Image (cartoon, rainbow, N blue to C red; front, side, top):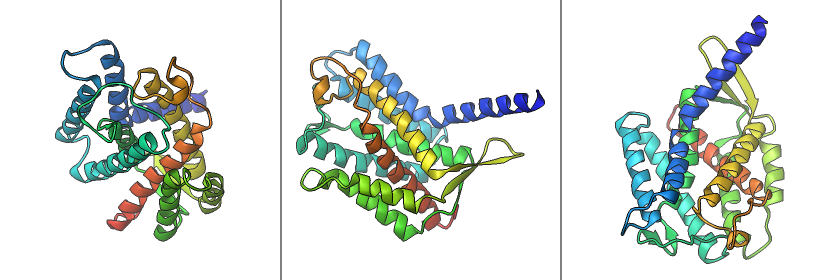
Length: 260
């Protein structure tokens, strides 16, 4: 009974920490939901979302929930996400943004970058709040190269063969022994395989993507007339993007001399 009580307590603490790590992602979904039912005259919804999320980001820095250094990393995710959005919307026509917007570039509203930045925010917050460390992590050169190749494949797969399954196989080999070490309380540490962590985060982002498309954040071609669940195959895309996010955070920590 004592062991059960202790495990329940640890699970509650872990859930609480996870909720704190998800402050910015929760803000994104809250704003998407609220703006889907409450409209402000003369301000396009997508522009309002961008303004509100920008204010949330500023507030998080002011309240010291994020540091300037962490904000720089999150901004990098915003830029990488926006570049991918521009390509996917205009070249491969993978999805669309059906609503009007003034604050956009090449048919992509600026707020879309915040959806990627929210993943970066979660990773940064989890690193800090769970006192994350890594074990058997691949070298900087290997992990950066693999991340670059898998990010590049999101663009090149439109013109040439989609190498994602070969990349996933390479990821399994490279990260097979890698694991995260984290602390829920001061007394114990826990370990989780990196591959399991990538998969779990990718799955929850897939759920989040369904919520986002439901609130008309964007639409896939099969959702043009009415909303449908996003194809389960999209999970592999989020699995890969999560790896880019986590590798960037871990390796930037190492480059800055705070070796995990």
